[in-house]
Length: 183
Image (cartoon, rainbow, N blue to C red):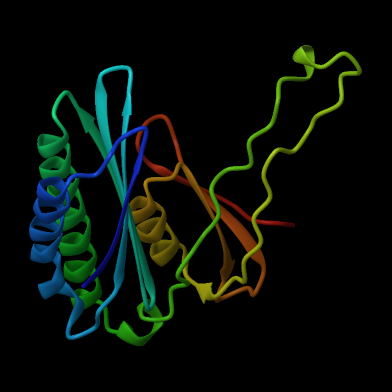
């Protein structure tokens, strides 16, 4: 596995870099000979040591973040979270008869678009502060729900393989999933 480790408001020491590499190295066994790049951001905000890790691999994007009062503990926690996500993904994909469909996941998907509160704006205009563009691969709702969980998002936009229309799957307050389809 390749690593890109950087610090925000923090100087990344050799010991911290080596600890991060060693811990993330445990995840290499899940990638079947591929050498994905792990993007790691270490930061300190208000005495909280935060670690964000994104691993884009062919057909899969795994992302996790954790924070604690100790940077080394945060690294350990985020690696455990990533390992759980990857194991869960591998278990599900091995149970599916259509494994090829799962291998075609895109490397990146959008975060939610952040909007300002119109009450904060004098004219009342909504200003979009971030835009992401991506291509949609056809998948079924179950695959989309799994990808949404892997990314840690509350919703996920995808092209429904059965109807070839854009759908949105979202997590409801009761923990179940909802699906939005166009008429």
